[in-house]
Image (cartoon, rainbow, N blue to C red; front, side):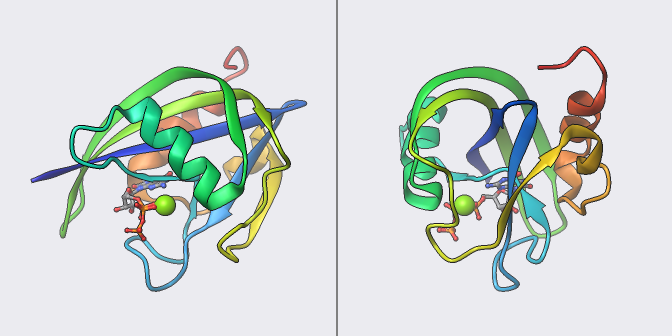
Length: 130
Ligand SMILES: Nc1nc2c([nH]c(=O)n2[C@@H]2O[C@H](COP(=O)(O)OP(=O)(O)OP(=O)(O)O)[C@@H](O)[C@H]2O)c(=O)[nH]1
Ligand SMILES: [Mg+2]
């Protein structure tokens, strides 16, 4: 079974917002682009809006599909729908108590992300992206 996930690359002033996954979560203690699992029959864009409100307290106003990545972890297969979120209401924060930060795109390469995110970090650190 493949788990469908929506995740948001929240961008403002050329900074990107990232959050730390808790140690209890799958791929714990790694940085992530906030988001979560789609519910049954839920469109990824809808899941994105719901999850970013739940986890970061923002209302998405503008988002663009960025990349879809299918990845098999040893314990789980995921299909990650990444979106660029370029406009939103509210100030993103760790609404569930998770550590968060804004980083420059080059700084993304210094952080540990789940394996599935490697192509995303590469795309974001290429000069012409976003
Ligand atoms: N949100 C998010 N999940 C990611 C990323 N990369 C990645 O492999 N995942 C995987 O996608 C899956 C779903 O994410 P999630 O744990 O955030 O789901 P959720 O918010 O619904 O969480 P919950 O099950 O704790 O309620 C996890 O297996 C996680 O390891 C990422 O950048 N952001
Ligand atoms: Mg989540």
